[in-house]
Image 1 (cartoon, rainbow, N blue to C red):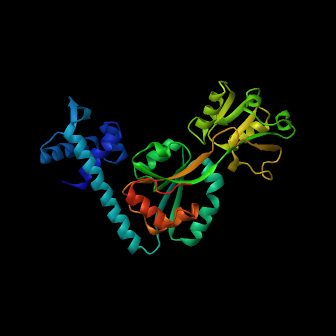
Image 2 (cartoon, one colour; image 1 turned 90 degrees about the vertical axis):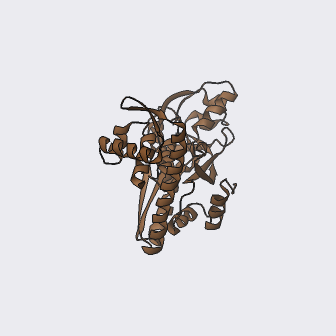
Image 3 (tube, rainbow, N blue to C red; image 1 turned 60 degrees about the horizontal axis):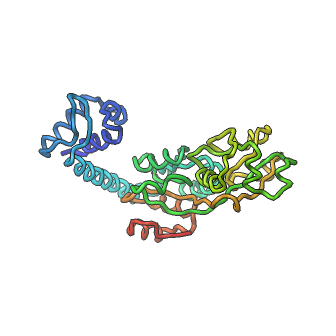
Length: 312
């Protein structure tokens, strides 16, 4: 039995039983993967995958057990390399942080600056994506740490830690009539609205707020990030609903913001880690720089307990 064989079967399942895509992902050939899977099944004495001709159609009952154990073995093999590198490389290495645009643009810059000053030998990479993409990157080991508001706590394979709470604000061009009245959902229904795509930045809470008053908002445009929303609000195409974190009165000249915390539920930014992963010293440092309450001890206790030990 070889670790590479275990990587093959785990990747095949990850790619929806498509051996060609698994081969492409692992930079190898389809016949080579198929041969190694057969050899592994012969050695173990069980069929891991169900087949129809040459096509894989499902995972067998023993295959589900094999895959679960294979994932744990691969995780521990990776942990072994990470732990040894942590002690031997003397403050160097690579850390991949996955985050949404709002977090990468508005929350992370001072954290990244301080981290690089503290760990100049560590190559820090930031990958931007949707909350679902971020969760999948962390699960696949393609990112070490994920940061988002939506979706992360919907993956039981991830350990999520609360970072901070934030609220929405409504933005409008200076002088807009909505700025002259107390802000209400009933008032917002009267205007065209521009806000986040359904997967981003508390959009589910915006939807629920209008549903509670049995109203359908006139959402004329959605975007993946606040900068795009502000651009179109500035063109007069509608009112914007964005994270209050993303508005700066000096930088966003020509626009005004009104707090909407009383209209929409507050949101929690979360940090995600893959369960059972080994965290290096610089991983802990980045986490604490981003969320000072998440000290190494708090994170370690949470990992040991397997749940969300810290509450905001």
